[in-house]
Image (cartoon, rainbow, N blue to C red):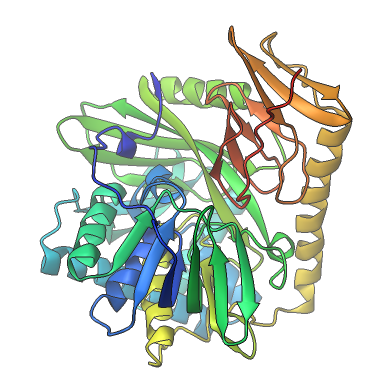
Length: 485
């Protein structure tokens, strides 16, 4: 079994370009997942000088770890939006998801992209009476909004379904868009990390290790923005972690999703081989820190379904307080800083949607969904408790890992010690790999992931390899320890 995303298993060595000089641009896009690449695609024919930077390789972040569903049937989100806002808001969100799906279909057809795009039936299920009642409410709302919904009884219990959803290979799609953008003359710099941003009159100066990018506008298309101010992302979101497996399959199934957490998700994938992709064990990243246990539990669940995983990996999703993304300006009177994030596990549709909205803002065009997903939208007073829960979760992760750095489940290869007044994490596989055991983002103590051999932040999901190189944000700094020990 490979500890690797199925989508990355067929990764071919492609020529990449890194930033090799300081440059001036009109628009800088930070992040090379579905949001960043989709935005660049929609701007590829503009006269603006635009570049995109990605700290790793295009698609190797969250997008390359998803299940690859393109779906508007998203648990009981429409019921939640009706209860939180109104039927009109639920309808607007539904239309946005349907438009995103149409956009993906249009691009795939126009550009003749081979990405295993397939139409599927999708179902949301539950066996719990409370959740079944929620599904019945969801069905009634969808039908009121003109969606034909199927009732079904499955082995998992009662389910509602729709027939016009899709699945695909997300990395094949992104690679194709990357190629199209480069051929259109837009620059993409991979393995290029922005460490710091400073305002200089009407420009922003963005610092990489060796060079700077001066830009008029910035689009933060990274999963979790690396800054804390002015947007206070830790207050407005929490990170949900899930474990995903891919197993060889000799039968095809519908796309399935449980209606409540811990989430279960199943989809079928056909390429040279047939796979069943199973997601489970979803939880707030501040809880259930023993990754070895989390992975084993997911494997047991997969085995109970008759699956024998060949691939296993984890993914992180940013969850917002009102179940809708943040897409647009992050400061009321500042047209220069834009963001797209917080997709609540539905990144394929919402990342595509963000590309449409953000590109329209850059080009000065109106977008009917800009107001709906405005990051500065005001929430009801009832959200205050959710903000406090997010703060409490982060504080829980911060405090408990400051107090107990050596976890009871660590094997003898892993330990955390104090050296010269610094907390040092050590992984010893015959060679000592030493790192600072503190996340540079907000100072949380790190947890060692014994399955993937990484140091992970239990507060906001930054990740570092065994030698301290930052491989996932929001941190932008490494934690390598070079001192004599």
